Length: 92
Image (tube, rainbow, N blue to C red; front, top):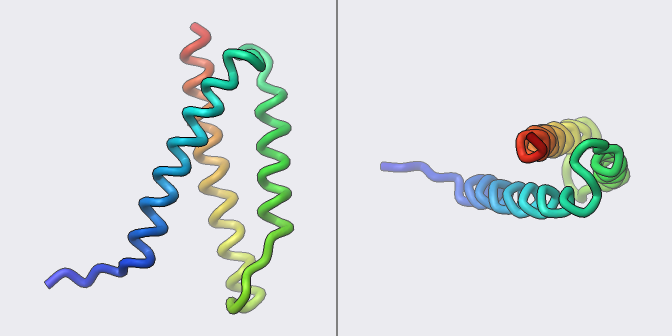
């Protein structure tokens, strides 16, 4: 019998979908913003991270909320690193 944690599975799939959409959008934007100097992407990443740091949730303890936000930031940075690699590959 499969013990599926549906809320966790839904969040995981939602992350995959949103990361893919973000990646595709940023790669497309790079055609207009530039593929050599990715300062614009660095600025966007800094803003995304700042927004996450300034967010809060209801329910979890402060310690758990910090872990949740740190995990979200790590996933965001992983996704944006993949975007950078894709942009650099497209520039070759």
